[in-house]
Length: 153
Image (cartoon, rainbow, N blue to C red):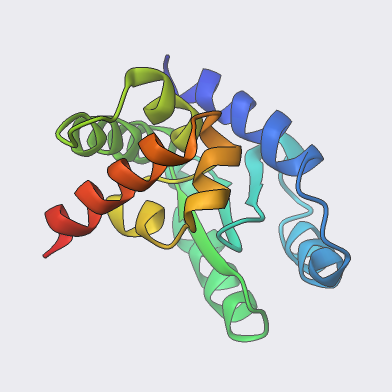
């Protein structure tokens, strides 16, 4: 799956799911700060409290300065990136996830679709949340999370 396909998957999953009223002010502020962009270029990963802003290389510096200012006023991490950079991060995530014993391609895809692009991101999940996101049983979720913790040491 390419970055555009994953980007659309992120938008469908994360923007419509996991609605948390506590985040609405921050989400609105993020969308208003980047109102000059098409809203499909703004990915809100509510679980991680991370916003990915997809811009072209000409808008990168301007958008990053706006993102940095916004991040200072918000509990959210704001990542301003290009499509090429996002695609590279996604490829790196699949590579890292693929090294983990017990991690299937389906689980990797679900994690990436929800904005988890590193082992450190996944390591923040509880077993229950990991099970919910990936559609796996408790034993497998626990095992994979243990393997991730080992890999991070």
